[in-house]
Image (cartoon, rainbow, N blue to C red; front, side, top):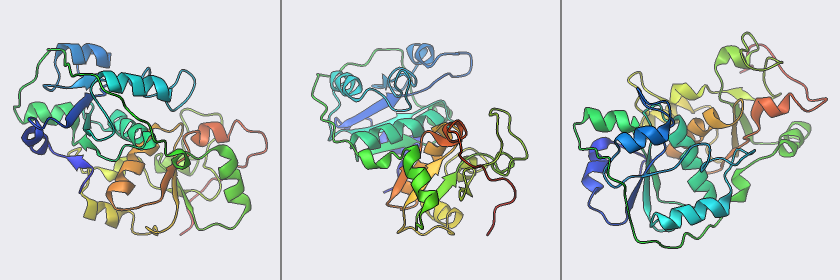
Length: 275
């Protein structure tokens, strides 16, 4: 079953009492804040999670687990709920949200293809009504091993390994030709480049599982894959794509290139990727 659902597929599920829809927009058209966009209009029955306050910690890539679990329980979400996430349509925050739920131990979680934009284009109803459900308890079963820290990346470079580290940034940034954000240019030694935007079709839809298998055909689906980028968010799109393509052992290094270059003594590679 694909992680990605179409607007039509979601519409057919709307009366399923086990389905929970979550709006994770960060902004949308005339709205600079996701909460304002949600309060103006959202999918019927949808709840809202804030990208910075709920899906991230105060000073960390991942959220405060117990606080998020309590909030999910108030939404009537438990470990058996079928969760469908949507953002404004660029898949960035929905992919981060998917990772967060995967980290929490949730299995039944999906992303709406092209998000709120696709829902509107299909002509389906939206509402400004606040959603309510009976409270429940959300039991966390953390997948802690899906998160990789900088020490693991260092050890990976020093030792022979069958794992692959992916840099999800644009190729020009990966090779060190263009770096608009950081004080150093290039990539973590040994990383392979798979720009996260290439998992989408020209119209913005996700590529289907077969297309994604072809996109990642140089990778071994039985080996460990670690995704990274600058600071974690773009890597989440590659992670969702890899999982949707059937890769089993996919992890994320959320510190990414921005953390790597801050640590004294860490080398940086530049130039064209070796095949």
